[in-house]
Image 1 (cartoon, helix red, strand yellow):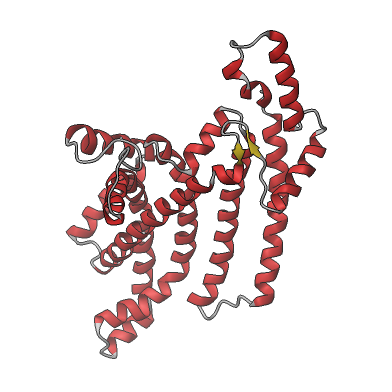
Image 2: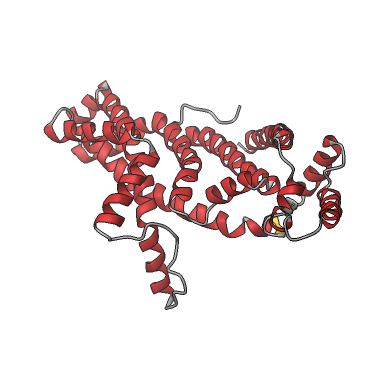
Length: 328
């Protein structure tokens, strides 16, 4: 197991290195000049000579006059020690800029995934057990509708209904401005603001995940070993959860982990629409303002998340199904 994990980690490092090369060169080939973008706010407030001097200094400070391969070497050397460079928008190290958004994104996504799993796993199992009943057919219709709607459409519907019409929740933001109180009151205020985006992310995940769990459980319940277990007189709960669910887990694990990774990328839209202080909002702002050091750091974060997902999926096979050998 340890040997396999070590091999996979080396593979992840190699993939991350290749992706860093592609991303760095891609971002630096995008039309635009970060030095001019940095001086855009003072362009009309200083003389042309002063502007030219500041522009040349900015290019020198940002290393834009160096060859692209030299700039990549400096950048990757800094990344290796946790230095992603400076943000020309925020005038701070990128590491400090993305620290708070990173925590918020992880909090939002883990919360949304926990809620979604708490709903979809029992619902999918119940629909498989009660297959072709009125309840099952109703859930299948609703999941198809939910699966067909894009995330931004669900977000617009939630905003219109729960924020504009009913006024139950705020439209955007993560906290009430200038709000103060106990730790519990601050947490309640944060959850109140996050109710709509978490609801959107949860509803957007219910359709596909519920249907997949239902299908996997349905296949498991139709196997001969389930009939044998029932013929032995085992309780239905034992048959469902100890026999059928465990065998249905193997195909479900792949979906669960890949879906968990997709939730992180899907939150880009949600964070932008609800003006949440997360990685998605900062990533789009960085692209718009040509702050490529911030954009690269956030992109690398999502690549690492994807690579970890693949590793966890492979390791999970060995835990779920003893027939699958991880030590290869």
